[in-house]
Length: 189
Image (cartoon, rainbow, N blue to C red; front, side, top):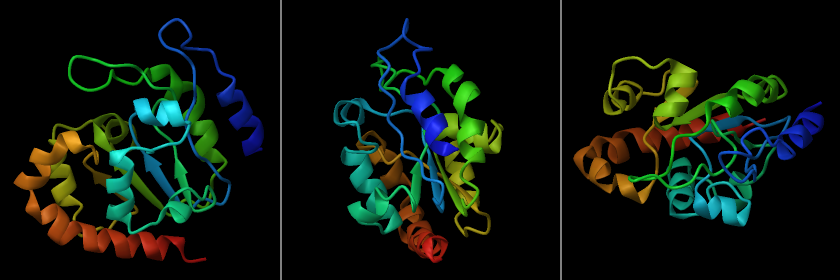
């Protein structure tokens, strides 16, 4: 049962020597959309709520979802590659510890059989869900702009990526309108 695994995740101390365990995720047995990101950010960690920051506001806008829809665990599962904030690095946050995905990811995904659309944010999630590959993120995002598959790679919605958004206007003009339609279709019962 999903609740049993979730309780195990919430009490996990595997990374206790590296960071302060404070898992932040959202899972539901009836979820239709999976958001696979890197790890919770500092604000998500503080608020105990995934994407409760400017990145989350941008992501909700991209998907055409309001707060109630986005935070409905029976609509949207938010399952990062690591569930705890990994801390700050020189540029951005530290990489997510691999042990988290190794211990929990497949167990949790197996309990969410109704996932219709997987949204992959950033390179760590991309490597897990799509394979590492040699293609740069921009190329992978560009290649999936027609949304013919049920797994879609997106750049991270962080304000730190503002330059990428400006350099790739096709993303907002071409891909996002299609993405909103695909999200809406995925949530229809």
